[in-house]
Length: 160
Image (tube, rainbow, N blue to C red; front, side, top):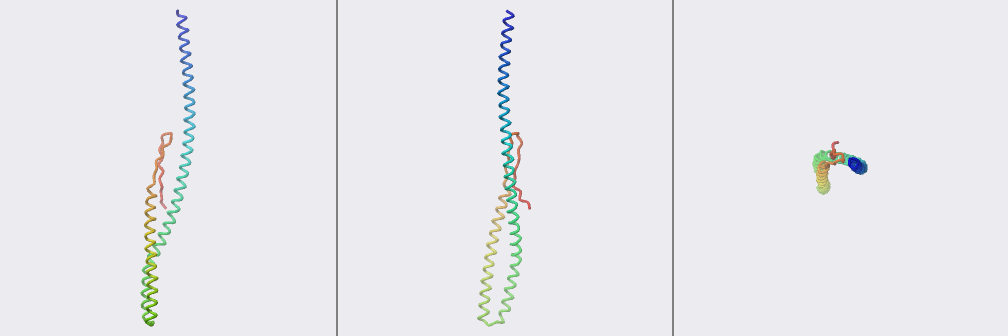
């Protein structure tokens, strides 16, 4: 009887070994699939990072152009009082001319001044809309979670 029990124990242990070998093979395959998935996700993360870096670079360039435009606009705004002073000087000089000629020049100058005022108002609205767009872009932020558990925060920074 002992011999039969020993054989039964050997058979049972061989079954357990075969089962463990099967489990080990399954785990190895699972590990390989997980490794492949990690590589794939890491590659996608690099692609997204590259994309966001390009977007950030493009936005920074656009911001620089907008800032240059704001500087230009501000220069024009300072020039506006100078235009008003020039108009007043022209009016003063025009008083020396015949009344018909004086009225014609003043009307032309006033029309020109009105056109400039309209242009400046339009530019101010445009600059306000650009500033609003900049503020929206600065609010972009995403958290990306890697398979390894690490979280990465991707933000749009528009510092000049």
